[in-house]
Length: 420
Image 1 (cartoon, rainbow, N blue to C red):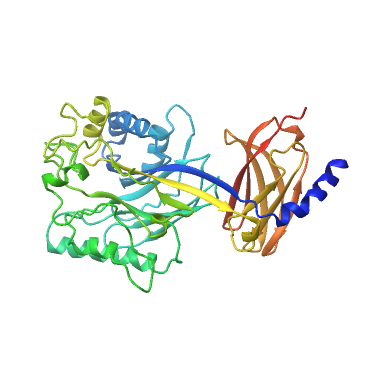
Image 2: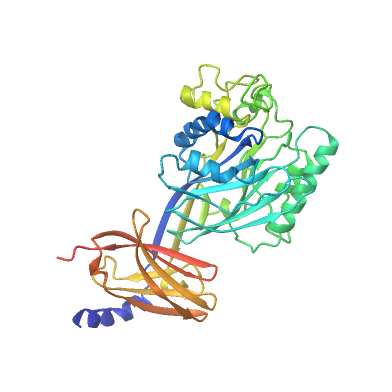
């Protein structure tokens, strides 16, 4: 009974103090055109041949989120998840909902302990769908929208026009997002120069909306030049095989672009200097990527990049962070406060619900395993408090508490101290 009294005594300070709580994590996002994975004419042979190469690259890069293009069959994502991302039964990664549309498709894989997948929304174009993947970062509660695209290929005015039309479809969606929304677009853009209509439309900053994208590189003119060799992502091969393009490294087709909100300090922020075309050392212009020496990746990784796809993956790091204080609780729908922290037997939480619905609370250990779950409770819009008891059954250590109500998911780490 005394411990509850102690909580009550500290509650006024807890409710009104201007004490900030901050959490952050750096997340590596990777985009990769897999080159028609798997070959539908002989799935077992193709996966047996290429999966080891994919695994070499993925294990070397170690991404937190992987976005893929040219997923070629309805089983593409499930095959890649089991045969590449989670080989050996590690179950580190989950895959987002896969939608098998016309032509090839987009997939997404993410660390199960770090993200919750929310949705996959199709943006239809005349050729390949653009997919909007929505995820929530469990630690900070930050939401990220990731658009994956594979625009029309080939050089020439009709193809330029088609790519511009596909970007128009994307901008119709991003232009109506709320100001401050964190979003990126990644994939195989098949864009050849800075004056192409699709590229101009991606970057076009309209006064009336915040739907434009930012390219960290200023690359005026045509991109398949020696002066831009550090940024090229296709082709990994000088000769043609496996259905991929040839000619060596001389095109910048694969990119990661991001919203104005991501370019500024806030919940999701691009980490300066982290954009990387994996395996490109700038010394393989018009050559195969595995011509020795490759000065940026081990030779086995260069060989894997050469053998598995005609595109290099591109990676970038983003810092996910959430800094809130008690004054902001009624304004910030991604806020949760915990007292005391470290805890012994009880914790007291504060939370602002932006919708009416059933609240579900779970507690996870550092391995991502659920150690406690609580019965759902109906909550109205607004601020509420809850006392969670009987934590003495848990071992001392770091835990994650997760609250979800409708489409709102918020998480925070806390510590259980020794019970002695």
